Length: 104
Image 1 (cartoon, rainbow, N blue to C red):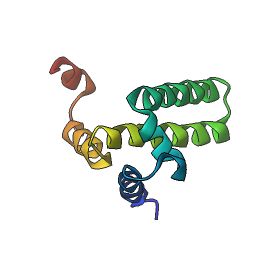
Image 2: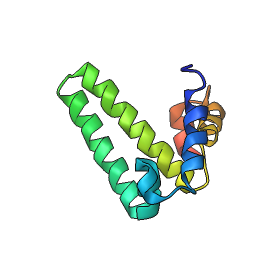
Image 3: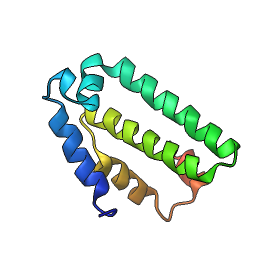
Image 4: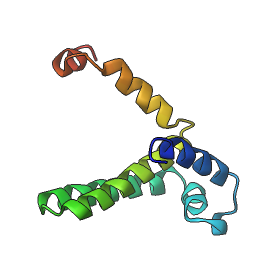
């Protein structure tokens, strides 16, 4: 299941776009708009950093899952999905991070 979970989640997130705001958490985020989604991504990023700083590995995994989830909501809101990010990571694979950064 874990190998397909990103795609499965992306499909559910796409389905939620047309749903009533009171039907699901994701639908309510879409209804609130980009600023609300960005706020959640920032909040989850901060919680992820704090879990790592505190050395709480279990909490780090939990918060990273929240961060990834809300980032996927953001991508879906913008008409993108996990495959777009995975393709970019594949493009960078085997390229020196220093060279990749210099090419931007």
